Figure 1 (cartoon, rainbow, N blue to C red):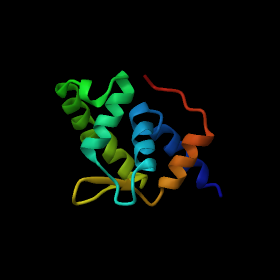
Figure 2 (figure 1 turned 90 degrees about the vertical axis):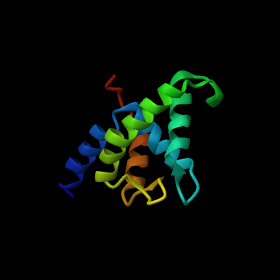
Figure 3 (figure 1 turned 90 degrees about the horizontal axis):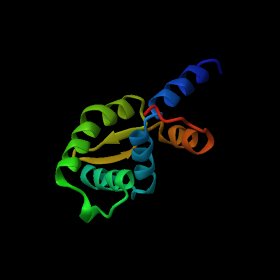
Figure 4 (figure 1 turned 120 degrees about the vertical axis):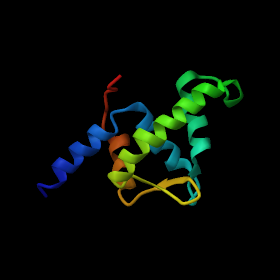
Length: 112
């Protein structure tokens, strides 16, 4: 039981970032085969700036996609919260349920 506390702290630290929380929520509503990275990027950017996907500047989408690929996805994958398939779909990882449960039961404070 003692190992659950450090693991919970790691998950807490990992999902403090709003983009990581948003990514977990996008995966939660995705079909079983996952969500394409581009779709996740467009949904997250839409949430961030509050416009329709058609109103998003392409440069901001490219920057977000790069940030997700280089920073957020590897961190979430290393913890087992998500996986990325060979086809580029983001799916729930082996520990996804734990991460999602944490999101819906714990009040997190943004690090931004």
